[in-house]
Image (cartoon, rainbow, N blue to C red; front, side):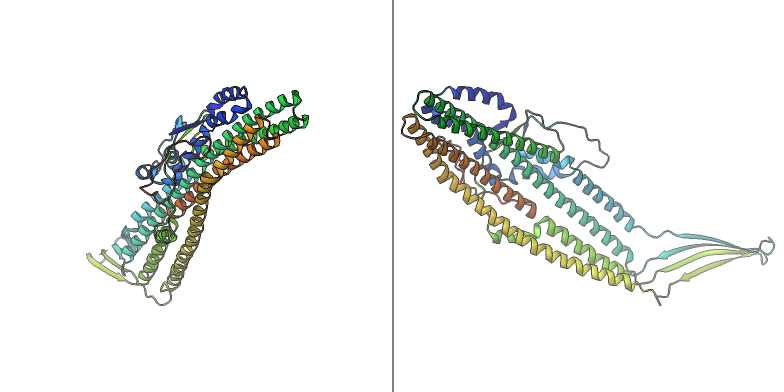
Length: 483
């Protein structure tokens, strides 16, 4: 575990001051120490590459359900050491899109209850003649009997509509989870870039000091000092840009989890193995479990149930009536019985049935379209994931060691007068470009894995036999080779 915190700024200044006092020949040694924070971040970012979904899989179900409607939501701040699991939990509990989708599910529960109710009976009272002696009064109770299975079909359609609402809620959860993962790793990536920029600024200061001393000693041209100062200014500008990107990333994370982040907020990332890239065949078999496919399938089932309901409504309903009639002129009571049945001569519900059939066909076509688009998206994202993973391995195994070796050779040669300042500056710039490329590649892997999680509702687990290697190679930046 490694904790990354904005509160480490003061400690960095102390490190910078101490590093500035080092001779040029000791820069590579100081670099080995200063890069530990970057190495921990680079190794820690492999967490999402290995179990981005499994780390919170066990706790996901109980926390995905938003609070009940009307439940009080007290304002709170994020914990001092925020993990990805905690961030997802906060978003699941407080995100307004999930609350809205949950209310839709609750609304469909009322629709299911209403669909299963019987028609109310009718009470009719009639009176003939205003004179008491010849008045006839009738009281009748009527009950409409639904024929053709209307009540069962209506309830089934309402239950399937509830299933559609539940599928929409699950799709929203997948989207929110992916948004949290993206925002969380954007913060970590931005922090890594900030630390790289700070280390680059420290080394640029060292090179500038060394160049100034050599100019003062008359060993090199004053142009060398000017170039060093320009390089230092450029590095400082990059550091300011990195700080701004970090501030924006923290704001996005705070918005998606619905919690404010304190200035001293830290983020904890477990170190795990490199993410195992699934094959296209494995991804294709999981399409039917994708949230978008489940939602489209639920809509097809609901539309088919509506077709059955409209077909059942073609059968006319029977109304039975029973009552009594009092004839004052005759002085007796008479029983009343009535039966009424609409004659389906003109309106046989044929228009509604035709509409329902067409909409059911439309839902099936939409389901096919969702599957085709999802399959294409999954294949593209899977290819991106494999490409990004290969890039990470290439940077860790080849580019980082070579860049570090070239930088150490250049600094050593510069201190001995064998290399020029331009050689050192070029080696330094190359080293930090490679390390920045490493962070970018790790970020691309995370983004691809997050997109798979959003599309399919899962992320395949890493290979069980791949154990994490937490050893820190000297100043290579290839922390914890996790492949």
